[in-house]
Image: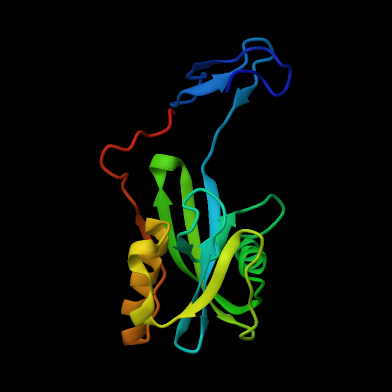
Length: 185
């Protein structure tokens, strides 16, 4: 951040009084600019024993498979965001949503939340952000072509939990990959 969104003056980084973190602060109007993690909301949509995956048409990871998911927008709940992303990426409607995985990705300042959900019908298609959308049996999941570790982890948990027919809410963190440069705080 270089300029204050309140007054346009250059900002500097320091720890404001009463705080414990480095923040961007405007020396002109004293506005403290807080930067917080982004929430990624998505679904693990199923039809019978199959899982719906989307092949990404956009970066990052264009051409790789993912669960329908994306950044939450202001004014919507996490569940609404997950439904919207499924509609946008897979032209599909989902029902019976149950929160399933909550995965912290602190090295990129994100939290990924996936819901288990059922497709309302087997009607789906590639949306603007997808090259292809398909149903996969567990044996056919393209593991080496999955876009994100949070997607891989959610699918691993799902297939493991499915054998027990018990789906606890899972909460964990994904560490950075070796050699990854993390964003400045």
